[in-house]
Image 1 (cartoon, one colour):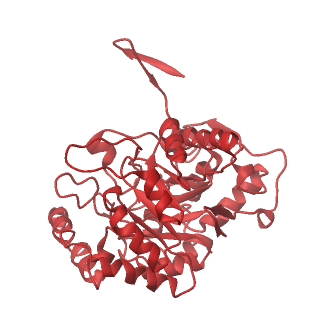
Image 2 (cartoon, one colour; image 1 turned 30 degrees about the horizontal axis):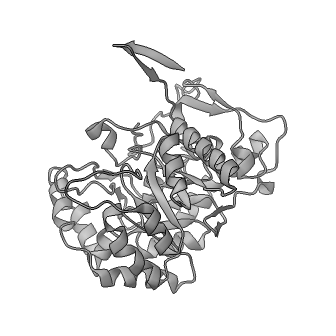
Length: 388
């Protein structure tokens, strides 16, 4: 539904996680009997969870631990792990900086250039543990880093920017030919981020193995405030999932949709998959893991931008091991631990045996769902406010 907003213009209403709820099914299933596995570009994952390519979330140690648990952690090749032999020293400088100096420290430590030898080294460090290796870069660096990562043994490559389209005009730099790059890489390439049906479909048409959905919803991202752009994640996921289904019907090729960002709790994850996502990519909840390099601090990939930072350093704390956050047992009652258990329980309650059935769950508009009758409960997760 669209609304008239003046000057002969209409605006469509869009929905985020706090605006909707899932309707229980006519049949319920034991959570132990539901299947949450998913396949992303030939990579078989036991759980539909990806850890965001953010320096406070994923380093080599975290990637190994996370991938051994059945998910997929993505290492940021534009980040500190490929700029410093010992990236933890730079991270320690950042997390110990006073608030008024944080942005200045960000810009300083990220001025150190990326070393190509470190790209190869990081991939090899992950692969020697017998797990999948997923890496990421911005489009401008994809051709420079991608083939090095591939030859070192990377299983899948993510090309990520705040907004990615197949058509990009610049008077100063040559745009990445996505279709050509994907063909030459010869390993799966995931493209993102986008939030609309048209762009998602165009990214699929140039050969994307999966699509990342989300612009600015993350807890550490200020893109929506700085640039004023974005679409709430439920609507964005539904629109891009429709593109996936249309493309599959037309070509027979299924391109998974990964909702990226904006999820803090198991309930958010369940709503993302019910909206059509095949998997979710999460940052801040995993930044709270003991294994996360940020030691309880979290920041976005665009935070250190030299001219226009689009992120902030946030303190999310440490709540447990990555295994506890994914599989429990939960030590908190706020939905931020045992995310896999929450997904299985929700799927059982709506009668979904697998991810595909969960995508067909009935969704209702229910902005009061989290507040109704909950006046005696805390309404905010300590240290983790949601950004929409």
